[in-house]
Length: 398
Image (cartoon, rainbow, N blue to C red; front, side, top):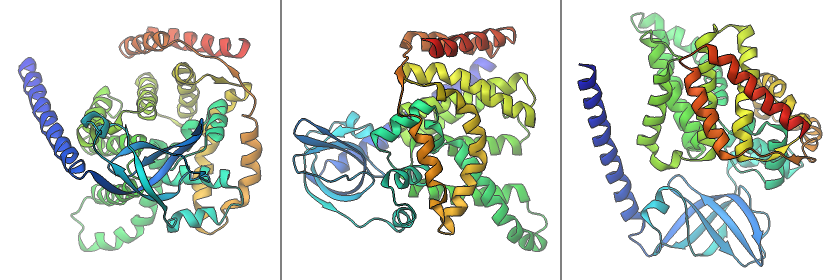
């Protein structure tokens, strides 16, 4: 009976996948239908190569690269209008990213939110950092390097933590108003109604930030967790993670495949792994933060090589960020966002000096396989902690 249900589920999944590919292909055909496509885009990366600039551009539909031999100013996070040639764009490129010849590049006026943040900071580097934190925008290479060295890149890439804080704030805002309505409709489920309202606002936030992959995963997972709680299911089950990956893939297709998305999925997996063996208490929540740091240290150093002694402050920075994030949201709302700029600059400056510590990809894969066995055998839990701790020590004394 179980095999039959599994077979039916896989068949349905396959049919939905085929349908999703067809929808994407129709979108692709429509996109290349015109030889020249005019697009409104945002610059999410810019760097110089030889005697020309490379621009990475993005809107809600596509992400692509183009080049310019003009002497461009720093356009990071600027809004542009641009014409591109669609002749050589492949279907796979349309789904992921592609290169396109462009012309008639025009600078557009910054959005109200961009201006609101920029006007509160005298340093472009800091304003871009906050725009990344609030709007999912790009960060310059040097700042990304500093964040990586300090082990806090995940704090400035919109993810489940940020969406959780936003959900909590929205819940607090909506609850008093709902109480008034609930008196007229007492038969309604307060938890369900407020959840739907919060999700609706968060979806608009995703639209505003052009659906960053890590935020897509977080939003989908939040809905799945909401349904699991509503129907009294175990929220630390691997089914939550599997459903999140499948649904994110079916809805947003190949756009979810990025280093940030994969690392965020791994982070959630280790959170679930920890709470499989420990109760979700305040004390264990703090311990979980250090456990995830150990685990993710392995994977982050299969991707990035920057290493510094200050990286070991990352778990403490993550704990403090729980208070920092809602505080800076409030400060920016009231127009006082620049108060902490000096502190942030000083902290980022600690990431200027680093050395290389890189782990081979095969080791990361083996570590993940070992982690999957830990999910089913508690005895191996301490072994994986010991292994990760030795890797961390290796980075310290390399």
